[in-house]
Amino acid sequence: MKPLTREITFALNGRPRSVEIPVTLSALDLLRDVLGLTGTKYACGEGECGACTILVDERSLCSCLLFAVDLDGRAVTTIEGIATDDTCAPLIQAFVAAGAVQCGFCTPGLVLQARHFLADNPAADRTAIKRAIEGNLCRCTGYQKIIDAVASHVAALNVPEGRQDARPRR
Ligand code: FES
Ligand code: FES
Image 1 (cartoon, rainbow, N blue to C red):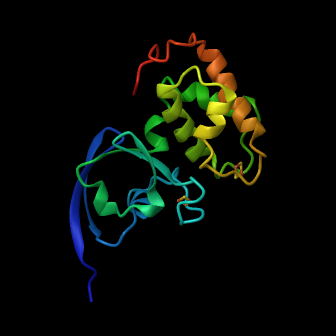
Image 2: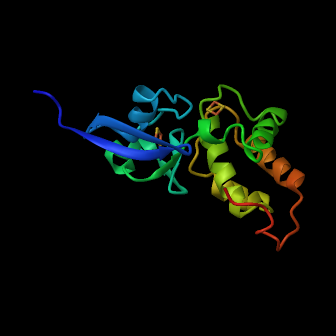
Image 3: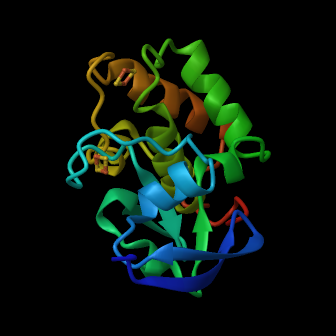
């Protein structure tokens, strides 16, 4: 029997997309397998690791836990949508410079999560950074270099404390 399908329309990285999909398809499988956006990673599949992090209407969510049909009418941002913007490219460079990337499997989720957090907290300290990325697991780095990377990016932003609104929100 053919699976039940439904057409959904949503904004993907700022561009409208319409696609007919099985109603049981996950948002992660839609992005990776149907739309070819493989920057969003599949790891645990259970909402535990953050490798599949995406933004849905500016909320950071695990795409492995979402049905694709729930993206209907939403604005979705993946790592591909922000990788070259003027706030994210320096953050990625900070990851590289700090040696915070080994196998790289966790990196898209971490970068997306950090970039999302720093949009509202551009003067965050290490404690706040740790808290912000605690849902994103990394098997390789021991986390210190990741925290170093985000902290060095914050230092480079040089936003005075108390001026959390000094950076544009995207
Ligand atoms: S793959 Fe979604 S949280 Fe791990
Ligand atoms: S760099 Fe390998 S899981 Fe993080």
